[in-house]
Amino acid sequence: MLYIVAFPRKQRSNLAKMGTQPIKWLLLLYQIPAKSETGRVRVWRALQKIGVVSVKNSVSAAPDTAVFRKEILDIAGEIIALGGEAIVTEGGFLFGLDTDSLLQSYNTQLDVEFKSLAKEIREATKEVSIKMAANEFMKWEHKRTKFKSKLNALVSRLISAVDGEDQCESSLKAFEKKLKGGIERGGKEKLAKPPPGSIWVTRKNPHVDRLASAWLIKKFIDPKAEIRFVDMDKYTWDKNHIRFDVFNADYGHIDDKCTFEVLIDNFKIRKPAVRKLAEIIHDLDIQDQKYDRRETEGIRMALDGVIRSYGNDNERLRNTMNLLDSLLLSL
Image (cartoon, rainbow, N blue to C red):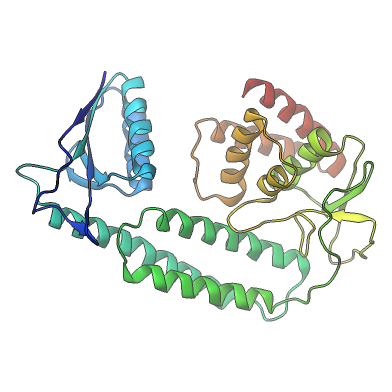
């Protein structure tokens, strides 16, 4: 069973403060059956991912924000599904838990994560070439998306300023500046609505994001579309072509979103199953475990099997489309 215990929310002098408002806390107390070792590891990973403070064995604390509340209740629900028990409390603590120390532990832990990401970004910046081919640029563009996604996730957990945030922001700006300077840009403005039967161009040897995006285009955007896979370093731009998931694309990565997500947003595809699939494709492409859906690993293996089985890009797409059609029905 899941028990939610609501403590009084009035101010107490020992509560940590953010400005003039006291910080409320969530406390998760749980027990997982000893036989469920895999489930225990999954719960541990989920708690680590959202950045809770470990108070003691099977007791974790987190600020009571909308982000944490949803995550904590989702994890509690998973514990119950494993046959365990979970209690989620909200509010302040009367005795035995110093909230000032709790806040300090939380901020210290978050600051370490920010600084670790900043270091990772700085190391990557050193490796970016001053001059690079279009295909190489896309490798670093995927890195940029991953960094941005990780940074956004950390920022969503902030309840007070930490030094590492500024380090991350400045490191990412330096990375993006060097990346933009590595190759010349050119081409056309993004089309608001491509005409039916358009030619959509992307890089050859497609993997997850390009295959899923091509399926999305054919399935929901333009059933008559022609998908072409080309060597972008030899490709000559044609004003009638629509480019996706390539350098200087009409539709590509934006902020922390992969091309598949950008297409969904741009063409306002609201089908719930497609939105679920977008979370899976994001994690497979960006590899940041942002959504961490249970289906992701199985779908990764299925797509990997298709990619390994077909060297011809069009055959690879045809078989991916069959796979994603079936997956859409399942979702």
